Amino acid sequence: MRSRRHTSKIILAVASVFLFFLVSCGIPTYIVPKISFSNVKSGNNAESFTVAYNCSDSLGDSGRVGLLLLYGIYGSTPQSSDYKPIETQFKKMFVPSEYNGANVDVTEGEPVLNANDINVYAFRKNGSVITDPDYTTLLSNSDDFSRDVALAYQDGAISLSIDRMPISTLSLDPATEVGDSQYIGIYAAVSVKSNSYTNHYWSDLKFVGYIRVVEE
Figure 1 (cartoon, rainbow, N blue to C red):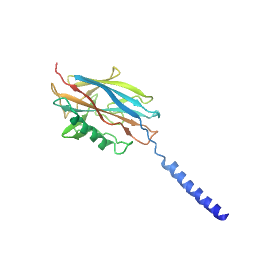
Figure 2: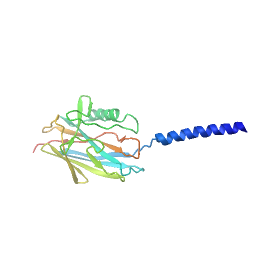
Figure 3: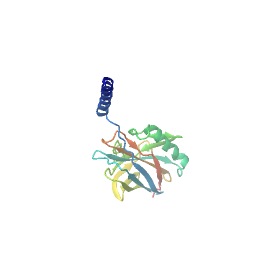
Figure 4: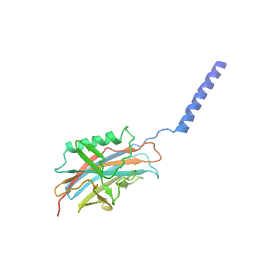
């Protein structure tokens, strides 16, 4: 009888210690939304695509869904051999584990990514360097959504619109320049963060078309 009581006390003590660590350290909670890019349309001085977000978990008021847009300058139409290594490099650098990524820190004059001698930079937004967690622009943090993103180039500036509503003016990094008949290859990824979850989720980086610069 005493042996059983002694065993019960040991089990209770172990359970108490385990509960203490759970309460004090917290149980990791992960948000893993489904994000996709589609309807890519490339063209002269303009480009567009659709970004969709689906998730059964709520982000809460602290949630931030940021759209990150990067670009590379190409002398001819970008091919898969140009952009696939960039997509792979993004995952290696900023998504070290399956559901938890790192902040993308942007420094003026320096590429965010480099693969096969191709440099990829972040756009400047309204004349300033973009930062976490907003990145190039914030998207909805309350419900599932599908948004049409459009970029229009004119005289070195790029107007960013979402669902035909002007959002901001983007510009190239000072370290780069683009000329007539060159191509601005566009890459997109979505960052998801919330105080309700322990992870910083990144979608895959995807090549979402190009703007062919045509001086008028």
